[in-house]
Length: 137
Image 1: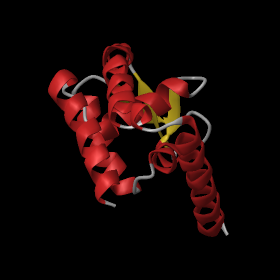
Image 2: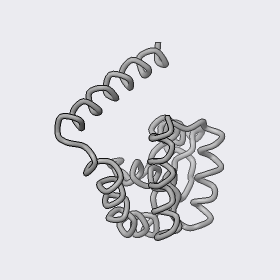
Image 3: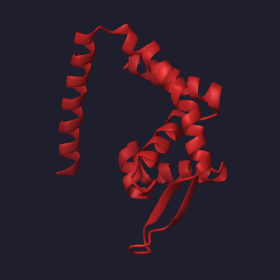
């Protein structure tokens, strides 16, 4: 647990220091830019960010004030809320991505050999699948 917390704290610090973005903001921007339309329902975004809807709402509100995202009503039903990445959000993500990749490589990937990376990947795929199945069932 200590290693996980230290790694996440370091990744967050690198993004905050160099780009004024938190790791959670970075994750939200990645999810939005990977969506085919650049937008996701807030409920889908919360699921993808592994965040509570309440926490995500506050985070997205701050990102909206910073010009990185826009919120709007869903055109399909009018009840849901969409979060859309803006040009500013795309710019901030593109600027921060090399720093994040560098940090992940320096503080995780480059510390492990190929067999260790495969083992970590296998373990977390299994953990994710079991917990995801349990949560959805």
